[in-house]
Amino acid sequence: MSPPDTDGALDALFLPLAAGDVALPAVGPALFLRARAGAWLRAWPRERFACVQTFKPFADALARAGVGVIDEPDPAARFPLVFLLPPRQREESRALLARAVRHAVPGGIVVACQANNEGARSMEADLERLAGTLQSLSKHKCRVAWTAPLGEGVDAALVEAWIALDAPRPIADGRYLSRPGLFAWDRIDTASALLAAHLPATLAGRVADLGAGYGYLAAEVVRRCPRVEAIDLYEAERRALEPARLNLERAVREASRAVAFEVFWHDVAAGLPQRYDAIVSNPPFHQGRADQPELGRAFIAAAAAALRPHGSLWLVANRHLAYEATLAARFATVRVVDVRDGFKVIEAKEPRA
Image (tube, rainbow, N blue to C red):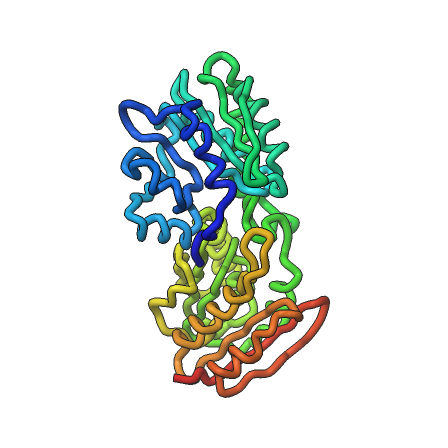
């Protein structure tokens, strides 16, 4: 998965820099949270930016463009200028805006941009609550807002309160941990629950969960399939790895048996590094608001290539997604196990070479 060729929010984010309303720091880099590759790389020296990106396909695209992607900076790290592209989910967005303000030096500036249909007005209001007076403009159906040099107008207590919104928290009556912004972050996803209900107790050996999110399906494999000896979780959003690891630790502990597991920050569409006896997946089929069924097809191809000859893929998908042709091309046996609530559960066996 690659960043879109046309990225209105990314292009609008740099308008204050292009207009001279803000300037790159004379010493040290600007921090860019949720950075994406795009036209800005042709306009400004990439070495002047410290880029953070938790979504693996976007991080890989930055690396291919020659941009160094750093881990999350230390909470004490400070920067004269901070750019960010807030996500749509409100609590996740507030936490990121608060981190941006905390990372700015006294007198520093924070610049944020969001698409109008992703919550731009709310983003602007939230940044104003954190930092005080803003300037803003609209372009590309997006809104970019930037702070005055930060000083006494910063609400330090609100900054810390909103940063805490990103911490993993209990959901589903305390059965799982999750955090805002992950897929179905505050509930058990209906499609995943349907797939879990059909997982056969005969699954055995080494299993993978593709697009694992906070680890619900993998935990259900541990609970329902006593012959599984090891399970690997693959997830493109790095923020999911911590709750997924904690949820798997609990599932293994409650199962009272040895199940090895690993959690990988990985783009499944790039293929898998291991071979498996079985794979389970509720693959993504959209990015943002746009349906992209090719993501699911890429997951199917990766699963077929990684399964051992006797292996099986257990997949759940929206009923309208036509994955059957892709499955038939990659597996000798394909059967629809159940269709319910707008979803379908499919088992595919005997991967084709």
